[in-house]
Image (cartoon, rainbow, N blue to C red; front, side):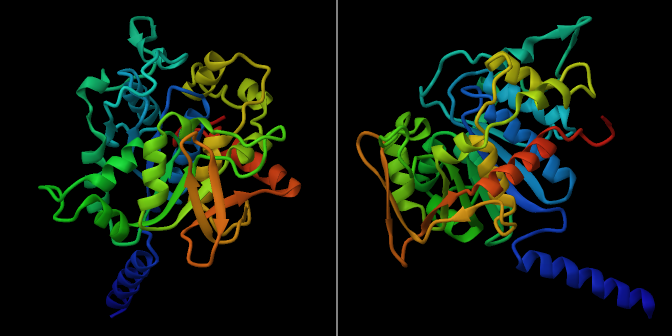
Length: 341
């Protein structure tokens, strides 16, 4: 009898977790990134993996918007470093930012004739199409459960919205997004003046048309982390120098150093979108009122308040800056399971 009661309790817990948009192993999360263009994408991956180890999220796919063949192998190497080399990776072939990265060449490093960072995916040419990966990941998850963190260009998600029904799902991309996605957390735009001027933010400017499609056509809630948020929360270089030394080589700290040698405190743009996506109700950030974001032909973002709007943007107080910095340092530098400091 007691066994039956226990089984019922377990099943009830599983069911309630799904209703809340969460499985017992954490919120299903898709990371859409232009990794290779800046080192904050790499630190953001460390945050995601730490949160997965803690049972807070589950990385179900990584899709890439920088069009260079080393980016996908680099992502695979980072996932493998954290013991999760099986995570699906998708790429776009858009021609956007095809330049060599300052740090993805780490995938070719060897020590004693062995790969410093083992990985199975050897080239982006061998990776799946990003839209197919997005469709598969969304179709496999419970309705209203997925959070997407977009920290690069809007290319992949705009293409998802345009995708028709196929063998993966009878739903169009827009229908999949509407049915499966609970929140889209985006690092893009700027919602305060920077040096007294409107700021055309990089992730928007590199693919303006896709950013316009996303803001205009995404069927659910979008929360933007503007340029000003990451700028206000710099990652302390002292952490790069001290907190990753539990292994001889660490992909996060080595990418950071190769991108720009310390001492420098790099803004935490992409990390903030991850933190909010997983912990929207922990008080790490404030939120603007509801409204609508539009993107003009120069890549400038404008927010107009309105109760029917689906968009908000993050705000941050001095007290929150301190709290968020500490959280991001602790999470990004947290060792993989089985390794200690």
